[in-house]
Structures are given as C-alpha cells and as structure tokens.
Image (cartoon, rainbow, N blue to C red; front, side, top):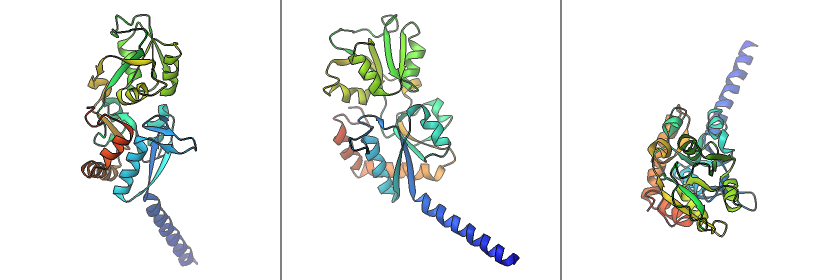
Length: 258
C-alpha cells in the first residue's frame, strides 16, 4: 500500500513538473494599457501599441507564446514582484530607484521628458521660478511626477491616474502645463486632440529622473529570462524588425530620439 501511495505521489510530482514546463513556454507580459501609442486598448478591447508589438516580436524570437496582462501603472512593479506576470513592457524608465526593486533589460528606447503647454498662452519659461504658483500636471507614480515634486516646490503639482487624464485637463485649461515622456507627448501633439498645445523649453534629460533609457523589467532572480530577453532584443534590432515597428508608430527613431 505504501508503494502505491509513493507511486501516486511520484506521478503527481511528475505531472506537476510537466505542467510547469508547459506553463513556462508562455511569457506573461505586464503592461498598462492606458499609454497610447505605446500601450492601449483598441475599440474591440484588444491591447495594442508599440510596446505590445515589441513584446510579440521578442516572444517570436524567443519561440515563446505571449500573454499580455493589463495593470494600473502605480501597481505595475508590485504586481511583477507578486508573480502576476514575468516581464514589464510598458515604456518604463530605467532609474536607480527602480533598479533597487527589479532587474532591467538593455534599453529598447532612449529617454527624455518635456514640458507641454497651450500654444496660445505663449508660455516660454518653464523654470521653477517662472512656474511659481502655476498648476503643472503629470501622471502619478512616474519619473515626471518625481521630477516636478522635487524641482517645483512652489508650483501646484497635480498628479493623475493616466496620461490621457493629464492631456484632458491641459486641453480644458485646468492646468497651465504638463511634464511628460517625450515620445507620447510628440505623438499627442501631432494628433487632433493635441493641436492646441506645443513643447516648451529644452528636453529634460537629467539621468536622476530619465535614467539610462527605457527598459523591460523582471524580477532580479530571473537571470535566464534577462539573458534571453536581451538576446532577443538585440536580434530584432539587428534584423530590422524593431525599425519596422518603430516606423509604424513614430517618425523619430526611439533608439536615438532623432
């Protein structure tokens, strides 16, 4: 009888192991789904955008299936650490503070931020002194938010759950300016919705806030995954896949911002 139970236990373990191997073939990718054109929902409820296409290309190169999981931005790293997914692909700046929590791939975008304001207000000076008492918006839990809170103590800094919400308040005149990631801001300004506004001041490239570029985040213990992702990223850049995806969404080269 003991042998029967032992055999059953061994078979159960083998079955679980086999299930784990099959499950590991699927790469679970966390993204926000609210940051167009990088990641967003289409009218039929599908995740789409630059980040999504890059993720699919990397999975194809790694010969793994992709499963995308949407997660609110302020919980995107905690959910990774809680094993809700294996990889964050959501246009995340590689910063020292984040590197204390997670491991990052090689950059798949260059990084910079910019101020944006209503072009008819003719705001030209966005220094902390010039912006005293003015209302500046940014998406919460972002490096833009950290930058504003640290450098604009005498401004009214307002934080929003999504980038779309910041854009809406700028268009509506409820804020005087906003700080955002250069690429989505450039894309928005070229749209009908962003026609009211323009970039103001120089690009913000302080590495304390924009870090070492934009990378994919993983748990620190997932060293094999990190290696595989970096190899796949290098491959899609080398074979032209990255550039095709880039041109689908942007006129600028995201690797150089030129």
